[in-house]
Image (cartoon, rainbow, N blue to C red; front, side, top):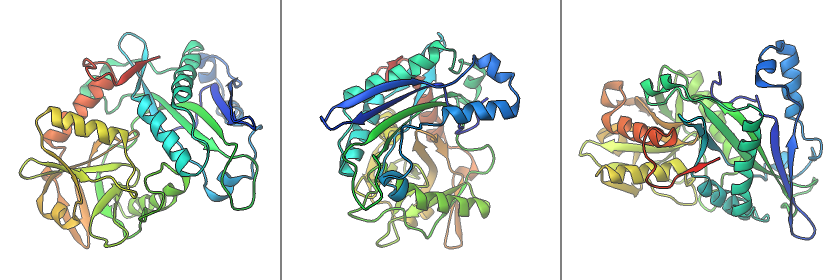
Length: 363
């Protein structure tokens, strides 16, 4: 069963390239595979060899703007198994719009949203048709689907061959699919404020850009080596306002019941789960504020804390440590509001609650 991200890519993938005629040339690729049952019987060595073949795209150049300079962007979205045996994508229109904005922000042709939507549905459908999909498990209901599995889709841009400094004029967009389980491992959910900076004003912090993830990866690994699960970033100018977690947006419930989250700007990624959580909290009658969030306010007045993202879902943080001081939220246990938002969001995604918002797209 899938544990977090895996490279056990499904057989069907997708590529499109923006050609000299300014048209996107699309192709669905069926990579080598057996049936899921047959693959489960393979030796580890044989399975590794097969998966390596599925992770090989010889038509893509090794040396280019993306591999040399991080000039690329990506998306992450999920298709969730439903009780009736189907799969549904969560808000793929939002990913399509963000992918286009990210590509345009990197001065490359934007991938059309309607092509994106058709491609992600078709990739999931083609893999379903040859048996590659997670099956709904009623046991997931016991923990509000925290242990639930899904199909993870990774669309990403990749530039044409290049070695000098420049921007892509004829990029590829590639879409692969993998099984995915819970992102955070069970156990400690302690966080620490890092002294590293994720993004700077007038930079690429608002883009889901490859290069943006270098510093967060280093900060998270540093935090984990010190016994924490997550690293929290402050702003790069004054070093006093909370901005994001290592790969997700962050929320705080204050003692007076307000839910606060850092306001969007050019240093913060406009998360799709973030947007969804804000709407769901409003539906619950919670007053939500998007504004600057001083770390001192968090340490003194926050009652609950959680992060939100495609990978993280809604995941509570039991504490944050900053400058030798530790604030413990809700006695180190998941809070009532966090639990309600987690349950509401997951129930919509897995079909346990009616989707009254039109967020779920059937495959």
